[in-house]
Length: 203
Ligand code: SF4
Ligand code: SF4
Ligand code: SF4
Image (cartoon, rainbow, N blue to C red; front, top):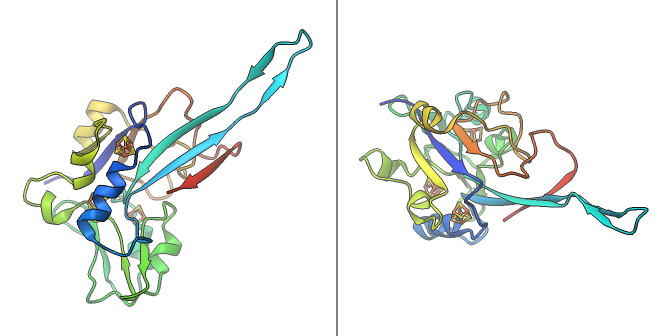
C-alpha cells in the first residue's frame, strides 16, 4: 500500500460542515473535540471611485481540514513517549492512547492545529484517516458524508496525478514545513499560503 492522503475540492465546498459533524458523530467525544475543522477565510474591502462607482476585492472561502498524514510529521518528532507515530503500511499518522500522556507537544508542533486535547481523558485526539475503516478498504466518514463530494481519500500519488499537487492555500501554512499528503483544487478567490490580508475563523 502507498502513502494515503486527502484531496479537497475548494470549488465545491459550501462550508456546510457535514464532514466535521459526521466525524464528531463517529467518535462521540466531547463537543469541543473537533477532528475535522472547516476554516472560513475572508477579507478584502471596497472603495468609492472618483466617478462615484464602487470597486471591491472582497473574498471568502472554506477549507476542510483533518490530519494531513504528513511526510514530515513534526507531531511525531515532538512526542516524548512515542505515542504519536506514522504507520509503515499506509503512512497514516496515529496516536497510541495507551502511551499518550496528554502533554500537548504534538499540538504545539502541528501547524494545522490537528491534535486536540481531550481534557476528561488527558489524551490527545486527532484525525487518524479513519484507519479502522480505511485499512479494510473503506472510506473515511467525512469523505462519504460530504454532500458536495468535495473530499477524496486514497493513494496520495494517485490523487496528485488526478488533481495536481497544491496545498499552498491560505490560511494553511507553507507545505514545505511538514509535506502534507494533501492536495487542493483552489477556488477562484483562493490566496496563497503566507497571505496576510485575511481573517481565519476555525469551526
Ligand atoms: S461537507 Fe463538504 S461541502 Fe460541507 S464543509 Fe465539508 S467539505 Fe465542505
Ligand atoms: S497535520 Fe499535523 S498532526 Fe497531522 S501529520 Fe501533519 S503535523 Fe502531524
Ligand atoms: S478521516 Fe475520519 S477521523 Fe479524519 S476527519 Fe475524516 S472522519 Fe474524522
